[in-house]
Length: 222
Ligand code: ZN
Image 1: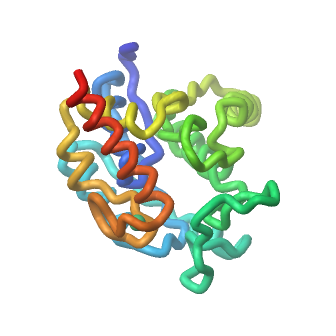
Image 2: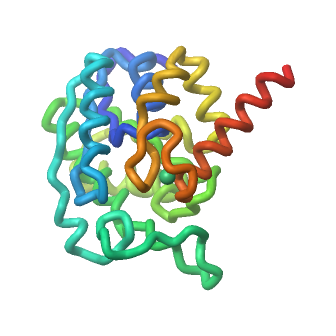
């Protein structure tokens, strides 16, 4: 898949969106990244995102979406709420789930893309792994894409290159893109704000590190 047009990437500086950055740079004429400041526990995430974008030579934009932290309480935006380690048994989502976040993010991204004459939007959501968040699922993305197009009378195309990949496959993708070490040592996925391999204990670290060891052992098997 190669496009002669530019793309806008929703970017956080984590493993997934950073892998998407290099995928987008291969597949579009140019890339600009949009990073959201929504009152994350660790503003370091934003510094890391900015540095990765700068080193990759793409335009970086930070959008203040701190209103999200005022809408509801959750463990990603509030330092006072302990994050759930596991998905609770009673059909609810872990409190790392920020209700409505991806719908808001995609809408903001589309408005900004439109202002730059960009119709391709890239996001690193995946439904193949742990989170099970409803706004990471393919049906939601397809529906949001349709709604946004109808709302703005535009022809946006939302790309989700990681949708069906587990974490080991995302590591493989980084390797194939030639950025395995960059993703491994410079990105931040940890909920406790520790770069690279992170704290090793939070759900994000467990997922990332398990994917990494699965990928590395599958490489040795070959
Ligand atoms: Zn961690």
